[in-house]
Amino acid sequence: MADNKDISILIVDDNDMTRETLRVILRHDTYNVAGEATDGSIALEMATRLKPDIILLDVVMPKVSGLEALRSIRLVLPDVMILMVTANKDQETVSEAVQAGISGYIIKPFNAKKVLDTVQSVANKVRSARQAAPAPAAPAAAPTTENGAA
Image (cartoon, rainbow, N blue to C red; front, side, top):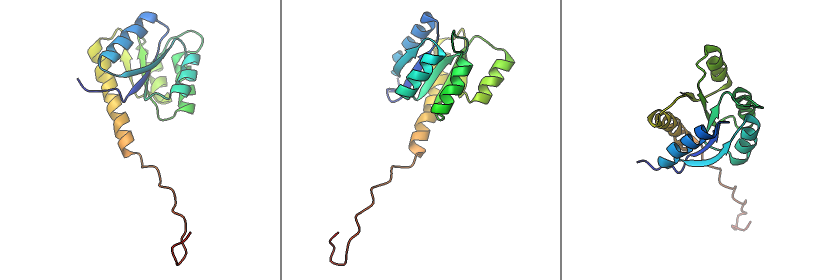
């Protein structure tokens, strides 16, 4: 089993059983489940605070829907990978989510293999982006004079 502790995940779903199932699946595969939220407004607050690598986001939730949360999260964390978790196969909803910038989706009901395959694919993109990111610039050296003193 690969070590996935370097990938932090936020699970957002109003259904306790769905959150628990996702948590168990992901932790069994050693992912770092950094937090869980029950609606879109809590998701935005937690995403801003935790800055996860991946967010699993339910579409249909009370208060703030997953699609509304997706747009808000994208404004704050434009590079975060977001996987929509939905039983809704409606083409309009899927198109709206794609236009808002999802990285993929998981259709309910799901099984562990489907969840892990989808998350692993996105986790690989996260790791690639980290490797491609430029290293932080070194601090500028103090100017020296002819005798070498600053």
